[in-house]
Amino acid sequence: MSTGEQARLYVRRLIFDGVLRQGQRVPQDAIAESLGISRIPIREALIALEHEGWMTIVPHRGVFVNALDEPSVHDHYELYGLFYGFAVRRAVEREGDALAGRLAPIQREIVKVAKAGDVARLHELIVNFHRTVVDAAHSPRLRTVLRQMTDIVPGNFFELVPNADTVGRRGVTAILAAIRKGDAQAAERAYATMLRHQGDLVVELFRQRGMFDDAAEAGS
Image (spheres, rainbow, N blue to C red):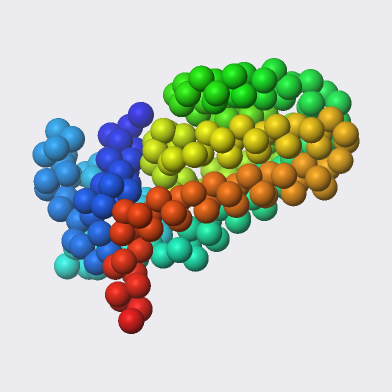
């Protein structure tokens, strides 16, 4: 991992943990000191975060944290649902039974580790499930779009978001069941449902942390 990417993830975690809040000026020197790196990768990270919508760079003034509201979080996961739903529909159309054969052992392991509470392994398996679906879609354009999207939750989603393991386990089970039937539309709906429910969990987590309070006050 490059120092710039390390810095980007670090700043994202500061936002997620509520250390950096809406309108706050990002303390670049303090972050560089904490990470033991120069300000150059910090600057690169903040430019990337501005492109992702997390920051606003104001010339001669500094870098400031943007507001995060509930509709934005819901929209983020709805978009994920659309893209992965498209991926699984194309994958079923193009690979059919072969796709089910590759996903079945992953799904069985997901169910096993989710029940065991092994969130580190669960994260790896869910990522592998998504990757297998995207690979089977044979869509370079889709890959490009997904690479441009970044997770709202930095780090292991299933460790940081309560009840995400249950949503993930049920979601991949429903997706696989639809794929086994050759029902591309049902698989698409199941993917969208799983990611919408993940979004609901993130909204609830952020609401409990008071992360939407600043955005609400700004709009009042």
